[in-house]
Image 1: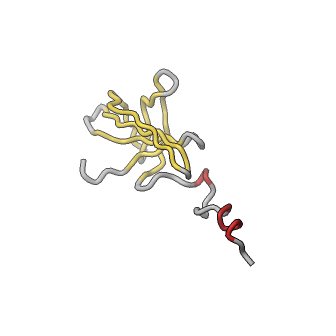
Image 2: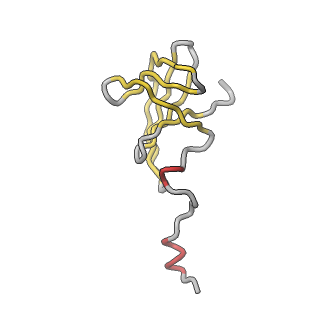
Length: 99
């Protein structure tokens, strides 16, 4: 029989923390860092995107993880949002539907 204490300790998510990622996002490969912490270039779908400007940085702290969100402008003029998972060290590109 399950007690309410056992249910409180169970995780809400079935996947381990290393396999979870932010909603509406795809994993990317970070190629270059500027000042050892700011993204400078990344690869998404075998295309290299160079970052010219970082317009905003914000932190997201939730129960299921901590992420840092970067709003960037690339060389081609496109505005994109990169998400860095601070616990696992992986990078994601948030899919934008209205840019």
